[in-house]
Length: 152
Image (cartoon, rainbow, N blue to C red; front, side):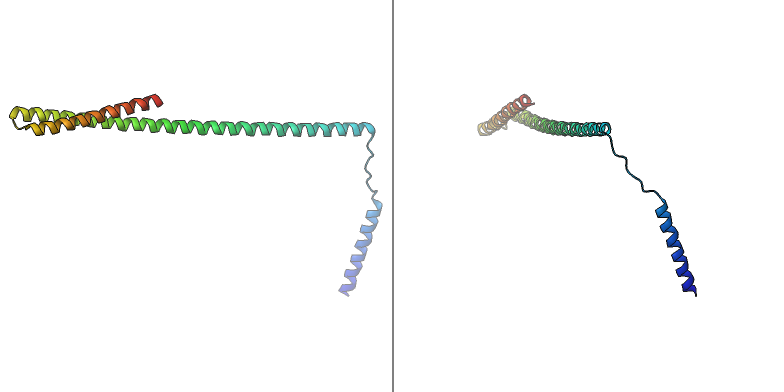
């Protein structure tokens, strides 16, 4: 019994929907006129032109971004190079100062020992060779510093 009622209701709904669909008028699209076609074509051309312009601007912006990135990388590289040179100058100056203090200490020791009569001619000669080596190393490092300053 329930099955008969359900089938009856379904048939009734189907009939109502069918008659409702038939009652509606089908929507028809208006046929565009020649003027409307011209306007539509002009709008389409305008959209295409804008798209091309946008593409060109994007390509130009990308190119400028690449240039800016290269310039930034170059600047960073120059900064690293400058810092490296400054570090080398600093370390070489420290070496020079260290060698100068060694020379001064050796000279003071020579004067003390000479005044006390403890220096033999052989010791005197050894100390002078040491001083000469240190002085040549000082000169070499000073030239190195000058070259590094010229690179900066």
